[in-house]
Structures are given as structure tokens and as C-alpha cells.
Length: 432
Image (cartoon, rainbow, N blue to C red):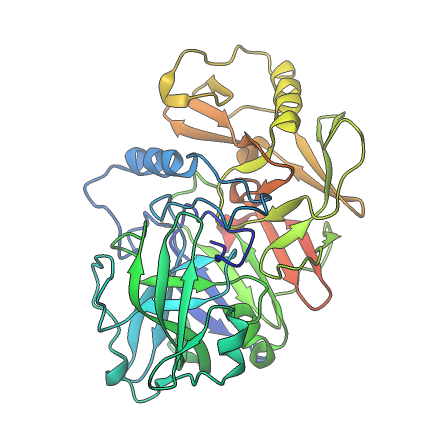
């Protein structure tokens, strides 16, 4: 989610992130991303069958989307129940587990804290800052209080904050410093001290009871990525997301710092475009080929730099309506079967009735710098229900769009925020 002083945000998606971290000898570490419906997830619905869980997740992901390139609007119209990654962090001393939504489109790390006078209902207990020996309020003279953009001074000279999201959700509270710890797969601990986070005492909007806060992973100075960069070997991270239909028990992976670099055969790299808003990860999309037929981003042949942003939380890829119309028409022309019509549950999506995924066509995403990213049907057609596969892209009333996590699955994707590049390497993410 983007903030109220940000033009963009992220719609968070299908998985829950429960982190077990593996520290590397050079300071980096990795976390496992656990599917929202995994039996290992604290929010696993035992009463739902696997097909029902899959179908529900797809429907959540395909709801209407706010224009991320409308700079007159504040942010994206995100609903908290669209499915999301939850990152398990242990904060404070004694340790307290927090499951927060992992959000690549915002920067602030925050959790619901006691006393919580105007908060949404939360299933798990809330964090009590008075119980932690490592907690300290941030003074209003601190640099971070100015960085957040909405900081103000309390009567106690602490930094109060107000941080809003595009669907009018809002967190308000006190900026503080705390120790955050991730548990390694070997039982060790990866502790990050003096992390600035928001202790939210008044949190309202579309958050749901399974969310204890948000973990900002954007490119701004207050994100977790930025705050830990000097301690883990650099401002860089990578992830490998399993495809949408993968068994919930199979985990994805995210790595931070040294060791997260994407190297080797098959790697393609494109520039991250720097804009005034440092949070989102912008790239330049020139067009998409359907087999050998190029569909340009626009009919003029000219594209603006940074016309798309990568979002590990948004499920479908969202592109300008005119581009979508031309692309979907070409996809349809190369599929030797008639699409489904007249099914209100599918809306205007391009869908086909088939017991297994389609054999083609292959799509190639062309990013600036000859970064050609080849997508197979496992990344471009998603099953919303048994016997139906739908094109995992949608048109939006916007000049730009989003490369969603359906398309990002089965790639090792590495962000180097020092070199301002993002790299893609085809991978079988189900193999860890």
C-alpha cells in the first residue's frame, strides 16, 4: 500500500509470509514465504477444501484496482482481504510475535499496540510496548520524524505519526525503535536492533483480524529493506514465488542483503527508474510479444520511462485498457478454442473451459535494455474454479500499470537498489 503522501501503492496478494530466517556468513539472510492457506499458516482454514481455498484466493485477487499512475489520487484502493503475504517478526524483549502484511508498495513497519483506543479487531494479542525492555519512543526532533512526512510532536516530545492508504485505511500512533528478530531454520536468531517502526494506537479501515500490522518493503528510507541494508551487506533483496496453483505446503523464498544477488545463465536485467516517490519499483515496458507477434505498449511506439511497477503483492498484471484490448485480441486469435461467454462469475475476463492449463501461447515481456522475460501459461493463465483458466492480465484506466505476482512466479527476481537494477532468472521456485 502506498501512503497518503505517495502516488502509488501495492495490492497485496495470495500468500502469507511466515518467516524462518537463515543467516549467511556475509550478513544476508533468507526467509520462507508460506502460502496463506498452508497448514503452517496461523490463519489456515481447516474447514475449507483445497479447491475452495484456491478459488477464494483468486476471487479476492481479481477485484477492481485503483489507478496507480493517477497523481491526483493518494494511493491504490487496496482491500485488506485480497490475500496477502504476512511476515512473522518477533519484536522486543521478551519476544512478541507479530504477523504483518509484507508490502512492497509502502515503507513504514508498524504493528497494533496497546492501548489501542480506535483499532480494528485483531485475533492475536496486541503488542504492549511497556512490557519490552528494548522499546523506546522516537523523539520528535529525530530525523525519521521528519522523513515520514506526517510526524508531529506529542506533549511528551515523542514523534506522533499518521500514515494513510488508498482505501482510506489509516494507522496513527508513535514512532519508536525496537529490536526485530527472525528465527533461522537451524534455530538461531537474526536480530536487527534499533529498527524504526510505528506503534499504532489508532488503526482503522479495511484491515482484517488476521493482520497485526504492515511491513513496508519499498525503496524509501523507512522501509525494512532500507533500514537493515547496512547490516546485511547492501540494499538489495530477491524473491522466488511459487506459481499460484502450487500446493499450499510448498514455500516461496525471500532473501535480503549479501547472497540475494541473481546471477548465472539466463539472467536478464533492466533499470529501475528513479522518480520523486522512492517507494515503488518502476521499470519501462516497451511491449509484449504473443509468440512472434509484437504488441507495442502504445500505438505511437513511444513509451514513457517507468510506465510499469513491479509488485509482488498485486496478483494480476494490470496494463492500460487500450494495450490490454490489443494484447487480449492477439492472445485470443492464437488459441484454437472459443472463450467462455455469459458467465457472470467471470466478469469480463478472457477465460477458457479446459480441464488443464493451455499449451500456449508463449508471451515475452520486453523491458528496456533488451530484457526479454518469457512467460508460459503457468504464469499467464490462472484457474479461478475447476475446469476454467483465465488470462491473468487486466485492463485499467491508466497511463501505466503493474507487473503482478502471477507473472513473477517461477522467476528468481533480484532488486539491487544501489545499482538501481532488477534482474530476472527463470527458476522452479517449488524446489526452494
